[in-house]
Structure formats: structure tokens, C-alpha cells
Length: 178
Image 1 (tube, rainbow, N blue to C red):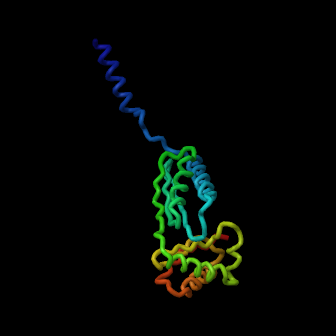
Image 2: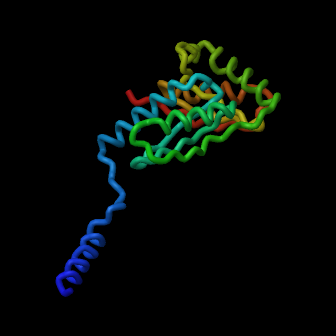
Image 3: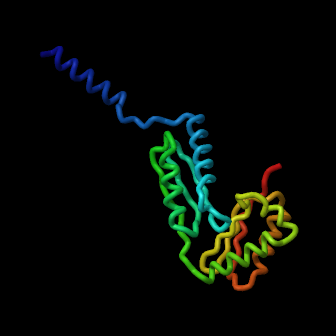
């Protein structure tokens, strides 16, 4: 009987010392791989355009999606694509679907022409993925993305401010590191 109690106590101690449900910590390599794959999956989404902005953060095996999109299907497609990545255990989808607005649609078109149609910024129009993202919500504009220089960042902001009917412009463009 004494041996049985001793064995039970020992097993209880081992269970407390080495919990079976312990969270496994991701290695730096695993987290880096997840980041690469999330980026790839988001870039491969078919309906992401210049008026959508998607970003993410990876914390261990958890991925948080943020941004703004014009179509609701883009939000769900992004979440579904990231959920399929090996190693991702949880996806927090904080992507905002912008409300439909004919006024905002007209502003988007004018902003696209004002920014990408300007000769000094036309080089950013080349390619499928446009580096300057134009987000319009209720007449308020946010520029997201990456440009080559501080001058291009300021010029894009000035061009956006020149479009009539806009209430405000927030220039969140980042300058690429050389």
C-alpha cells in the first residue's frame, strides 16, 4: 500500500512538473517561415487591388491580419489562405471591409489618376502590384505602401491633397531602405 501511495505521489509530481499541455514555443526559423508563407499567400490573392491594403503580424503560431479592403470576399479569402499554412494555429482577422459608397468610388478613380498619372510618379504604375495603396473611407484618404524616396512620398501626398472633394489625407507611405 505504501509503495502504491509513493508511486501515485511520484506520478502526480511528474505531471505537475512536466505538463502535457505546455505551449510549445516556436523556433525563430518556424516563425520566419510562417511570415514568408503568409506574405506569399496574401500577395497571391486574386482580387486585391490598389484600393486595398493588407498587412499582418506573426506572434508564434498566431497570425493577425489587418488592413482595409473594398470587397468582403477579400477579407474571407485572406483568412482562409492563411489558415491553410502549415504551423498556423490561430488567425485573428481584423481586416476592415470599407462601406460601399459611390462618392468614395469616384474619389478613388480621381486619386488613382492624380497619383499614378503624374509623370514623376508614373514608374510606380508599372507592374501588377501597385506600391502606393489608396484607401478611401467617407471622403478621408490614407496612402499606404512603399516609395523610393522622401520626395516621392511628399509628392504623392500633395497629389492626393489636390483632388477636390477630399476631407483629409493621411500619408503613411514608407521610404524604402537603400
